[in-house]
Image (cartoon, rainbow, N blue to C red; front, top):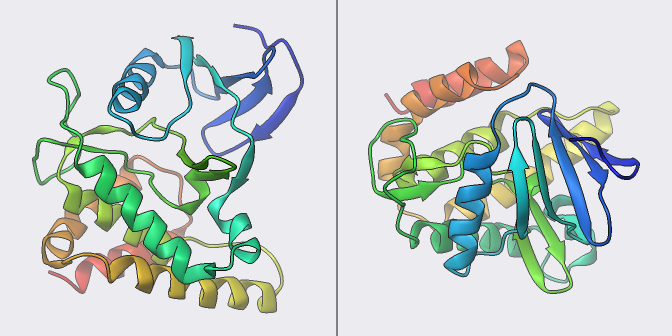
Length: 226
């Protein structure tokens, strides 16, 4: 499908275009059927989870509601609750998703097995803060699994993710992200997530594009729990 307007954003996996009144077209860089992603977004939306409304999807494209807001990281400086508030809010989104039963048709994700929905990219860059509250985007990895895997995934990504910029900018981001991560992790019993971490990290590396340094950090985190 061709977009009806200009490109407004791009990420590791896809690019976003304006597509009529209140809609955007998400077009994947590597063509794949996005109808399963539409289906799980519709499922969690029916259960009250904050996701954009999806109108149509096909091979390599998905048309959905345009979300007006900024991602959680950009919203932190504007929030009176700051980094700790973001960590708590992120944990609440995890808990809310874990309470939704996984549909029978949803494919299984990384071990351990479970009957919960796991987003597997539920981190601050995929949480848009809008006037009506948080909205979770990018459901490409959604699958059936265990909530402990979801926590382990967010843990690994926040622990290992690299940012660009000067030494001072990178250090500042690292300190802030560390505080957000510690607050997030305090909301959970982490024993099951630690057990899930080795399998999750290998799945993550196999299904993502990460630098050698990011891979080393994730594997070192996993190794500390073996």
